[in-house]
Length: 207
Image (cartoon, rainbow, N blue to C red; front, side, top):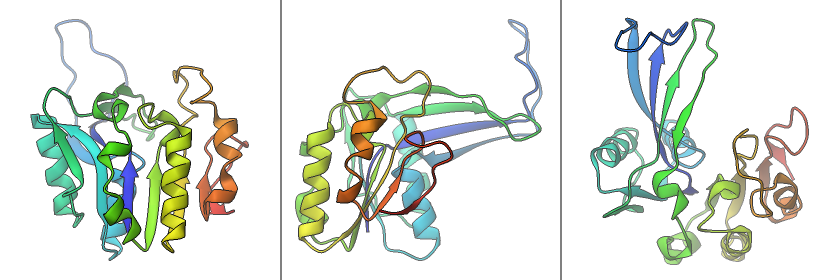
């Protein structure tokens, strides 16, 4: 199985009830890091369920990328398709978690902003029994037409395909390439589509 697209290192802090004053600190019960994003997070979950999973994405040649790669590898994900590009910073989020489990998010796009067709090994894609595209609507270096090409090529090779959209992000810049509606119109090209904002309360399901 190939999971391609958004890869993020999440840093989670718990519990957070308020922001501390400047130059002061609040003590936490724990801070942990996870491999996240709609490609990397999916890859980790599937690997833990026993699937053979390879990731395809762009990270930086930096310490954040080192940790992201390590966490993916520890989960059993093949990281040979995680490209570490010099001069690119790895995407990361800082997530303060409230005692009730709600979370805020500060996000840095990093390598996800430059991920494009040239970063995908099509021989690997064609050899995969399933292909998942995570966050295609925020992969501005890829674009809708390129994502459609990826999905159709995978299907021609006999793969099951899926997408997970992120357009519910409130600060996502409005543009034709990031509007959720055009992505929902592509639903027939995927076996599974998770549209987080195309319809209220939408959840994963067969198309």
